[in-house]
Length: 142
Image 1 (cartoon, rainbow, N blue to C red):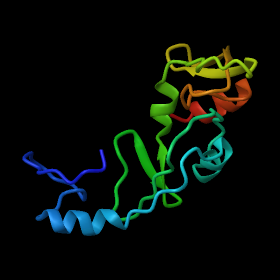
Image 2 (image 1 turned 180 degrees about the horizontal axis):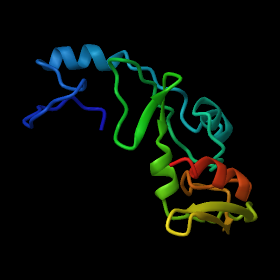
Image 3 (image 1 turned 90 degrees about the vertical axis):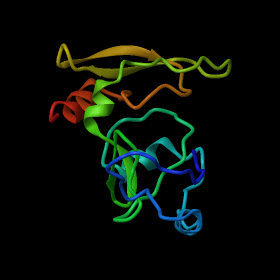
């Protein structure tokens, strides 16, 4: 959301501040990597083998700047948790005129195996691997 807002709940975390000024001072220093990063850059930072073509910001993290739900801080980067990645339903992405589809693999937790799907090389989600072996090797350790 990127806006300092009042917190009225219980059990606050490292993202709760006593004043708006404190929130703004802390959060303006949060560095974001350039949007629309290489799909390979995120998978390298996160020690992963997924390769979706997603337009996302790489969120940086540390002891004081926590990651959002379903993400964990690894190599100072908010990376999607394996459980989250492997639980996602496959997503073929968005068809773009100049992009042909290509075969990719997604992991199915219920069946504990991968399956092939057509990926249109734009958007989709993290449950997107080049090979069945990559999908199984990444997800089987859940």
